[in-house]
Length: 218
Image: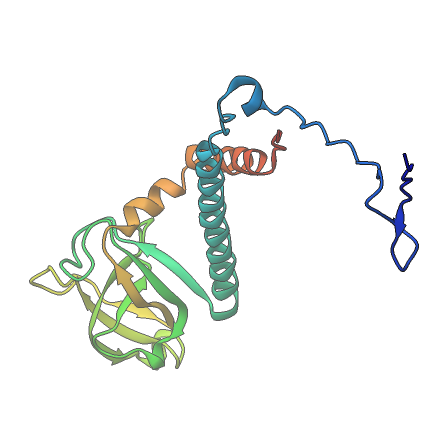
């Protein structure tokens, strides 16, 4: 009986072909939460609350920033252009400027520049508060009165009054109303109280602390 021996064949590059070649062991799959429990892991819900809180912070900081900018602009304008605010406590200038209205006035306008129809604020003799009425007549002043050549005698009347003021006003300058709006005077009156200033200061301080307080993230 002839014995037939087999020898492994070689490829051109010398590697064995057809022989016993080692086989790499299959990798063992790593168990996951799904393979262990049979269910998909639950996803954490999005932090809608934290997003809403962050939005509220940004809105409040924006409002506070706008308020601060407007306050600075008004302070600069009042110093540079000589502006101030008048609050109407009576209704003598209704309906144009009713009770509770406020107006921005140009301070110390020379009497020579005033015209009939202007609304001006002038002091009253023996009264602690000035009067703000409309000019209905302007007359020169007697040089012998000692008022000075720049002074004028003003006749005023409130828009809601049927007659002129009982007395005329001799002034060298007067505060002239530039623009006014109703109801704003009530808010400005409240804002001038110490309670409002204290509450505003405390509120801004708490807002800044809340906005920049470190938040833990997981």
